[in-house]
Image (cartoon, rainbow, N blue to C red; front, side, top):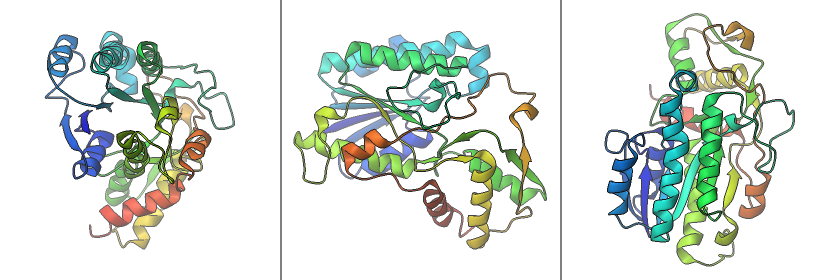
Length: 303
């Protein structure tokens, strides 16, 4: 099976490329090699290539910049995914497109299901939701995967920034009144690998997924929920146990209202329900605390 990954220089794309390169005929484009803002380049490059699955992990993800660069955000996050879906349709290929928990308004206080109404409160969320709709309007057999608070070794994320600050400063703070769930790129790769294995066999394996049902919108994150403060504190706790030198060991409290320099609104609560995935896979994602502990052990314990 031939797989093409867009956004191969990002956290998710790099993790998928590394996880699948020994198993599949796989290639990747990073931003410098293929810019989704240039739809003509996208059509020219991809239309001439042969592939069975196209995985789009690329996007304009700077939430505040999306508010001030709306045309570019809509082009990359909304229009380009629709073009990718059309290209895949012409090749009878499968498109797997990554989206975000920011398509929700955060007013709910129970995990968001795939069928819950998406009501974004930022232009980033609006553009990503438009991209989802454009993909599925071309072919509802494509797959849109919503993830949240993604972390991994290939590109610094929130917890990497918090660890760095704790290594350099005696006092660190994080927001305590915003809630979602971290998602480890290694676990994303394992989740998607279940689908790719079954899709390549075109059959239901005893412990696998029914490929025909693995379509539409799917939520995936690690299990549980936390605030950014809890997330950061657990990361520092794991660092201390792993022998990582820190100046700060306690994470102080900030409120969303303290973030006066933010331009875009963020949902207060954007926990994603993974019930649909668990039913399809016959297994549940591991807890976010276990995933973070694994990440710290693997990539920080020797620093």
